[in-house]
Image (cartoon, rainbow, N blue to C red; front, side, top):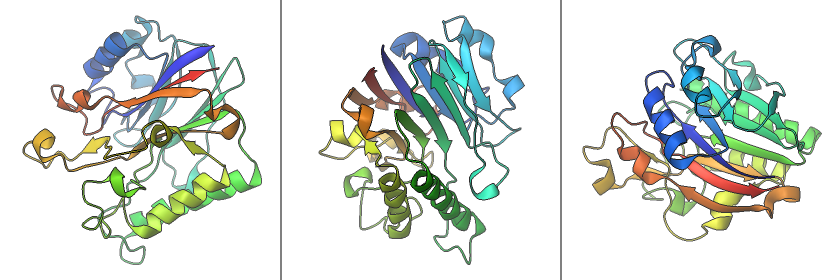
Length: 262
């Protein structure tokens, strides 16, 4: 059952409903994982998505902040969620397809502006979230699973516009990168985007602060698709839809895609 999956931090699913519809119409992924929906689940505009064939949804939401959802053309069951770091935030949801594949959609905390947990509570929350996620993978090895989302960390040197300049900037600090690697290693996850596109600069996020984001091109790869080793060889066609960052009233993130031949 081959399917194409996309992940996208939409930065308000209600405000950008038209952009979600545009993506679903033009790119037709079978599954779309959204982060930062900023909406209670009952306020997500599902009618427009259902009209395009996305008749299945699992989601966790809250008013104005966070929120994750998985829209699917394929039958999908709600397989729960976990409140990592006990933040009380809607940051994780799991969907299970009929073939037994589970999809974990995460919105990891951004971590604030100061990379020091003593000075910045949000940075500590980010590290704690990753630590609990790592420990969960040590306790139960994931199988036949996909992990996607805005992980808010650009792990490799070519995942940021300037490695040296960003070493002290939240999202690329050594401690964050180490925490993400430990989490990835604990589940033996394969970063399929970088496996498919191993060379060169690769970004999925560009700040709103740039007057001309495209020309400045000061991006970071914060959005990820991982797969467990038992299915990672069935993944191909990874890409980032950079043009979506230039759509009218866009999210500051671009969608990331991969195709799974399962």
